[in-house]
Image (tube, rainbow, N blue to C red):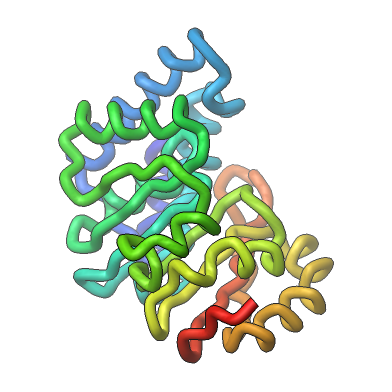
Length: 226
């Protein structure tokens, strides 16, 4: 499966180094060991890890150019067991990544994993996006904010918009069905907060593992009014 996922990613313009693949294998081993102690993630098989964590996480780079821009600061809101943030930090070492989650047990795992694999462009913050967005260290601090398996796009705007730097982009990992269901409420929230909303093409995941589509919300200007 690794060869198939590697080929899939190369087709999307994402080339992982041999070192990055080795680090991903170490992440999988740590996840598997931690899952024996408590429920960190429901994805426990290696092939499923490669498709649903690695390939799915990195696919966002095919949808938006921001992750290919050096010095972009990226926040992963609701990082869970560390995806997409860990895979993206390995793939794009010139960007800075912040893993955000409100569950201390998960942020501890991600932080320990970052230290174990020697990932120096990623750090961890334990907290809620809405609250962090009101703090000077995080308000308008991120050129890109990502969310995967967190909430619908309209609700995500309310949670995360204060984190966006001017011209920044908020990207929600969704399915085509979810985007269709959310399109009207998302459009209303986007207009209210001066965000332009677009959707990515539909991507097919490897091994017939489903489809992925991204809701892309780009900030026109700072608008923090409630």
